Image (tube, rainbow, N blue to C red; front, side, top):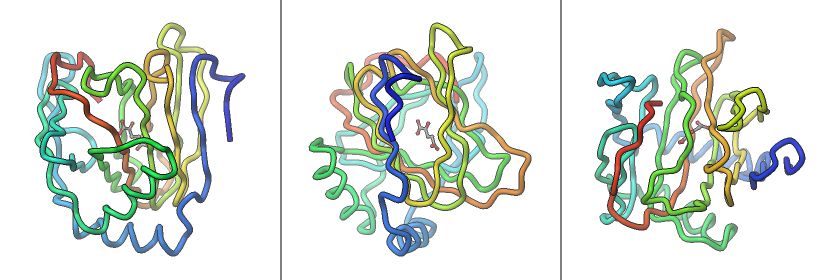
Length: 204
Ligand SMILES: O=C(O)CCC(=O)C(=O)O
């Protein structure tokens, strides 16, 4: 699904069920045990706080990443992720040397508004985001006019590609929900080009 008219200047593709259900089930189960889950500490409004979710930064040794005021050294790739990385490389005709994995235990775990615009991602990064488990609302809004927004429901096995100037003109977020909601895992594959040169101002 494309959103060229609702979101001018963005390049967003939503591919529901990109990973077939049996493969998505197996990957979700493998990741629950293979990933060294952590609570990332992030800088928000001048204070260090726990991020409201579990996370892990995984990548090639050079893929060091700085976001929300903190530095992340990559954990090694678990074998269960390597076929997926290769498949995304082929599907997107783009390399990915890292992945940020977030685990939302229930509806009270979330991700605040931000753009993936850290310098080490380059000017027009391609982010490949795979969702597993419970469906959640993914929100997008223009950075210069927060009233211009849309939302996409991301379900089990869905792939969302964000490329071009999406990060330059838009922010995204995964809001909390009061509805009873199961666990969800999200993987955002990225290509890190160079060591961090500056910190990201906003927390997530
Ligand atoms: O969980 C999601 O779908 C959003 C993840 C996200 O915004 C990010 O990793 O930057």
